[in-house]
Image (cartoon, rainbow, N blue to C red; front, side, top):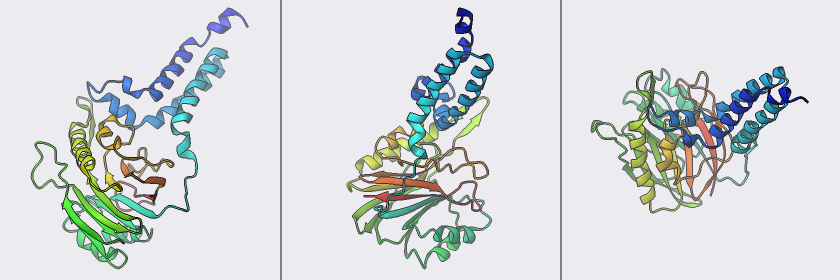
Length: 310
C-alpha cells in the first residue's frame, strides 16, 4: 500500500476518533453556553448513528486507516450501551413497577388507567394528574390498587399498604406555591419497608437563543437528591418523569445516589417517535433487572415498566 493510500481518509479517521471520545467522555463538552453538554448526554446513544456513515465513507474512500478508526466508536458504543441490548428478565425479581406521565391533555384518562392496570404491576406512579382526570384514574385503579396517595399533580397506586405519605418539595426558586410535583410513601412489601418516591422535575426547552434550557430541572434535581440522601429507609424506589436520561450530568444529584436499570433502552419520549427515556425507575439497595416501554396511551409519553429485585 502506498503512502498516498495510507494518508487517504485521515479526516474520516479523525472524525471517528472524535465520536469515540464524545461517547466515552461527553463531559468534555461544557454546559455553558446553552448546556450543550447535557443536550449531548440526553441523546448520547444516538451518536452511534454516525458510525455507519463513517464506515460507508471509509469503504468508498478505500481507506484502511479510516476503516480501522471507524471501529473505535463501535467499540466505545458497545462498551457503553451494548449491555442494554441483552435480555434482562430475572425470575427472582419481586416487584414490578410502572411509571407514566399521563399528560394533562390526555383525552381518555379512564382508558389509560385500564391499560396500566392491565400490566398487573405492584406499583403505578403517575404525573400530570389534573383535578378533572384524577377521579377517573382512581375509579379504574381502585379494585386492583386499594392503596393510593396523591400530592399535587403526582400520584402513587399500590398493591402494598402505604404509610408515612408526605409531600416532597422539589420546587425551584421562583415557582409558585401551588407547584407540587413530589411525594414519598412507605410501602410495606414482603421484602420489608420500601421508601417509594414519585417525582416530576421541571420541563426543559430547546431554543435557538437559550439552547438547552434545563436550569430549573437541574435545581429541582438537587432538591430531590438531598431528600433521597436523607432517607432513613435503606430500600428506595424512585419513579418519575425526570425530564432527562440517566447520562445527563444535570441529574447527577439523583443518579449518583441511585442505581439505573441494567438492561433495556425503554425510550419513553416522545410517544410518536421515542428517542430518549426521560421517565425513570431507579433504585437504592435494589436492582432494576429489566425495563421496557409499554404501548402508547393518550399521553405524549410512553409508560415504562420495570422488574425490581431486592
